[in-house]
Length: 280
Image 1 (cartoon, rainbow, N blue to C red):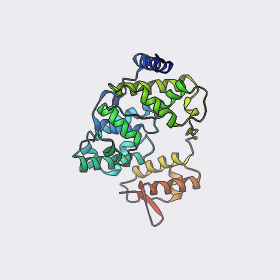
Image 2 (tube, helix red, strand yellow):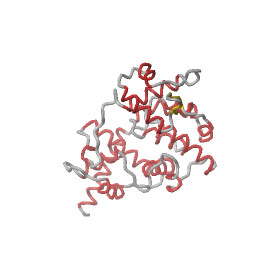
Image 3 (cartoon, rainbow, N blue to C red):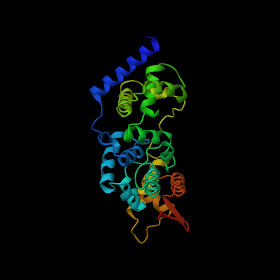
Image 4 (cartoon, rainbow, N blue to C red):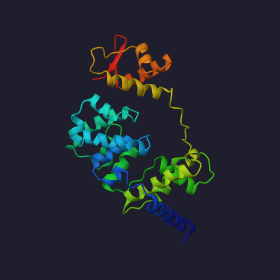
């Protein structure tokens, strides 16, 4: 047996042993193979920690239990159900994805990679994740926890490692008989590593340090959108920059302006005669 083969087998044993001992089986999307529920979870999990997603995920599915229910919903209702997760543009993409699935696939989430990637907001990772977790297809994919595992295990102390160097190892390690369980194990191992050792993701060539949230443009976007949703049924629902800065307790006019312009650009707000309101 070559050293590489033996090392890979030992690696698989470590990952599986950790999963058996500490696997996060309580996560609700781990308890379903429903493709709609899986695609909702994947949109929510983008750039958001799993434990933060759980309560919103459950409430969202109670409100919109199927592709048809989500496709028929209004934009404000979808945004309201999304509140608390941030990155609200994901909600609009998921809403439009449901409409496309209904129109083009009869309400059934496709299992074909090309068809999935044609949906709004579905990139290579999300398409692969839906195929893996909903349909148990042996795709090769990478996200932050998987990246951390392979950096820690195969590139200790090496800086600026590209994903192109990791992907062949991910493919070699893949369990093709049960990729769903294997990727769950990898993600849980990676999540644990980030708690127990210095974040291995810092070795990645694409690593970007997380910016302070309070006072940021992203923080302002969330506060402004929440204000717009709260006031959407009022006669005076439109607001000015000065009004939103005061009502949302945002001191920086420059930050408010940047946030408002981004919300308009992303289709979350509209601007009419110098005032802003929730997009229809």
